[in-house]
Image 1 (tube, rainbow, N blue to C red):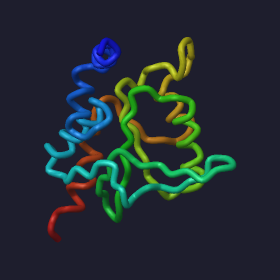
Image 2 (cartoon, rainbow, N blue to C red):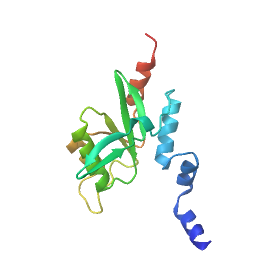
Image 3 (tube, rainbow, N blue to C red):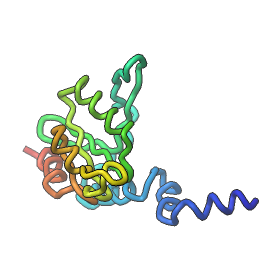
Length: 153
């Protein structure tokens, strides 16, 4: 019983609320609301869009957080609070193996250091490796890409 109470305290109220609504983090829940408020369909972790990639010596899959429409196709939005070295390596492998995929990041803090004491931040890493990113919310222009694609011709 005591262990269950301790675990409950460790998980923030916001994360518990997000988990109760089917998300893994508060940031994912916030982004889903932003997409819905923009009048776009919320396609969270689209099961049919798992991206296969090879981790050296093993086959792996990646399930993007959100799929949004854009002119001529779609792009994925990945939300990140903590961005571990494994996550960064994974995205480099995916980019190398699927250069046609448009994967964009929304960070809870784009200025967070890659690791404690690092002079490089999440945004620096994205700039260096050619990834598109935003801080805290999806930029309106990303949402408009999908809205423009949904207009009747």
